[in-house]
Length: 103
Image (cartoon, rainbow, N blue to C red; front, side, top):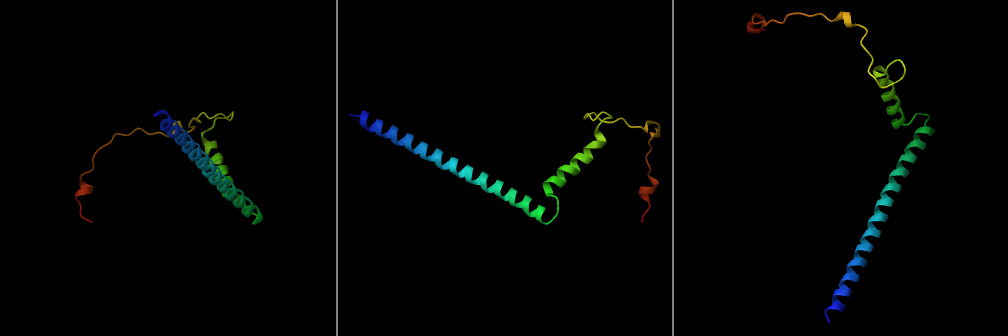
């Protein structure tokens, strides 16, 4: 006698999980479709106005800024400083007189 309610409960749980999975799948797909549509519309709008898309400009600026860290062969190795002789070694000392004078 207890098998029928347990079987019915298991079937209802499975149907609920399946319905929940289907609902969440449709929700995620809808959100993804809305995001892709918005990105495509922004791209078309920027091209119609004769400007480069903002995302493309950001990527181009990042690429230009990263060139300073590349070696001569285009690798990502940091470039060595050519002005190593400009480094001056000085002894540090504390300045108390400048701090004690009122402004």
